[in-house]
Image 1: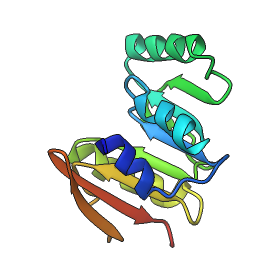
Image 2 (image 1 turned 90 degrees about the vertical axis):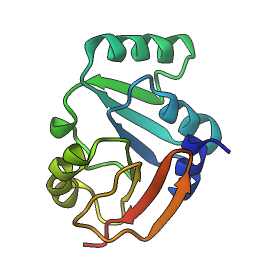
Image 3 (image 1 turned 45 degrees about the vertical axis):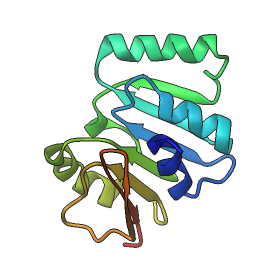
Image 4 (image 1 turned 120 degrees about the vertical axis):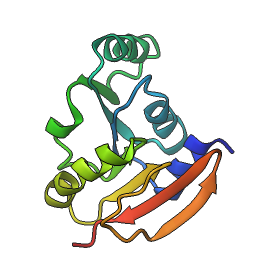
Length: 141
């Protein structure tokens, strides 16, 4: 099983839930969330070329109604409707996102981080996958 598939499995995604990918890159995580879990997705990518490529890819795959890609700084992203928030970011970025997620994510949201944890939160699950660890958090605050 790929790391992306394991992250999605650990998120316990139900059909129709919204998955937000902060720093979505090429959108592969959101594509897998739609195909394998029937989730809707929203990606935030600051790189204009990557965001444009990803938007075009979603259009060509006819997934653009279920997956939206925003060329936007993740720190300005609207995560209030997300059931699951996925990240694969450097430690400094995770630290900067902690307050945003704590204040803006809805109660019960799941946060899945690959490679680097959120140092000020207690994770509910951690496991090795590929070259790093997957950290699972539940917003119960």
